[in-house]
Amino acid sequence: MRSLAPQTARLSRALTLGMLLSMPLASLALAEGGTITVTGEATVQATPDMATIMLGVTTDGETASAAMTANNTAVSAVIARLTEAGIESRDLQTSNLSLNPNWVGYDTGSMPTIAGYSAMNFLNVRVRDLEQLGSLLDASISDGANTLNGITFEVSTPRPVMDEARKMAVDDAKARAELLAMAAGMTLGAIQSISDVPGYSNATPMFRADAAASGAVPIASGQIGITASVTVTYAMVD
Image (cartoon, rainbow, N blue to C red; front, side):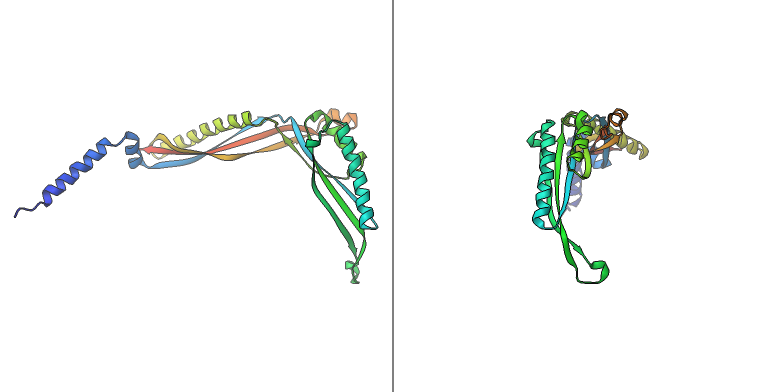
């Protein structure tokens, strides 16, 4: 009986060739050259138009009640001054409130005892008019705020700035991919996937001479760098 093996082999090769010819070009390129994945990054500088400050009031008292009463009085004065300056209630938020005993005697080797209490209250204050920032800090400190835990500068509408950074990040990713493809002796193909990496911002604060001259706390906003990152996978063509 005649063997069917040669005919089966020829039929298999014909089917394989037909399938390859019918595949889209992008699929052929992907099969032949593989893919390359790169991350592009870009930063756009923006001028902030608001800031968040964390003000704190710490008070001591012989009893827990005395410490908390003194703290409430001081914090109420600070809030009243901020409200008078135009800070809305939506922009005032208590971020931390604590009451702790002050233990003494550890360094002498004797039995530790309580020597009064400390009460602390911290407020997050959003300032939407940066021209007020220095004078608000100065007034708050005068009214009893004795702790400042930092200032964060922000852009009230960051989306347009972030979108611009995303566009630049995509361009950066393409430039990186083209460079690597050229170094490997290959050609960049179509985009296979793209993903947006959560961005971030950083502020570069600067001191302002006119604020210092006026007696207010000398603070200026500087600029914020808003950064976007994208990860892009390209097909590679031999």
